[in-house]
Image (cartoon, rainbow, N blue to C red; front, top):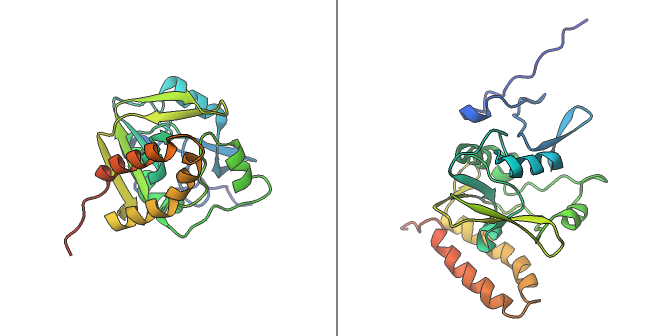
Length: 224
């Protein structure tokens, strides 16, 4: 009879100090604190709702689950940067940065969300607060700020207004993203925000203003 072995971290990962206590799954991947568990296995596509509440109330890092400090990092796509909202609580800067570089979904722009009867895009759009855009944005944004505010959307569900950005970092395929990559992501996703903006008086004007302001946070252009 074989002796069960404890999963070990894959050699390709080097974890920040704050993440070193996380559970390692059978494939050698660290399991972020927010991930839901089903039948003793992590379901990376789903968050634990109880941990969402706990993270907000106690100001805990969304990735490692330990206390946040004085600066907060939101990991999201560029559409969240334009409207300055996030459906997920913030993380430590190093935890958000590690996730942007190592999360398989964020690293591979061509990867799509695996769907089944339990977890699928239609169900997530219905359940999600705000404007849920169920796509791979192709680039990952780390929005660093000193403040944020919780508010309810028009469906009475909680959303987070990210504070003024002190810094914004951009990643694509596990490295720093180029301005062209970020602009391509914006161009391919802005239609979803425009769809909602056109439903409200002055919505497009407000969206265009927000987009112009957001342009200042994109990576610098590179000389060719």
